[in-house]
Length: 152
Image 1: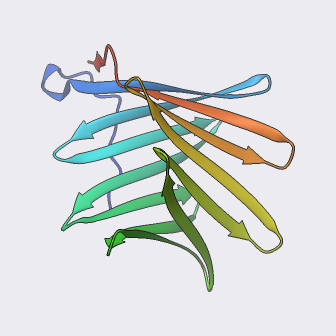
Image 2 (image 1 turned 135 degrees about the horizontal axis):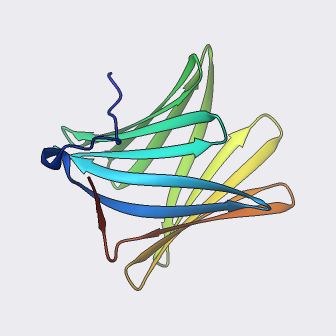
């Protein structure tokens, strides 16, 4: 899958972009969410490295592609019988993610060996908050759908 380039300067490639601020202590990670042809692209940049997350919606299946350097982690999100199963494949290992919905809160449990990473996705007042907790530190990701800016 070819990665898109968000740095188009052509007026024909105006993007309706939502800015996501991902803060980690003193470092700041910027995430761009662009929408093109029913495809939502999330660009998460970290220093000199770039992690690209493609969220595609085809045939009632949402595919999230998370690429890191030369490795590719594929996240398959399928919806069957009111249950959402997320498969995260890494090489020959498989990580299971359970997505539960309780009281307007979606909890994503990502288990890795003996460690557990919890992702809370809350929706309040047109704001989607993603809480990613790792050990004792918490990373808050705010995804707002207001005042979308167009990149030219």
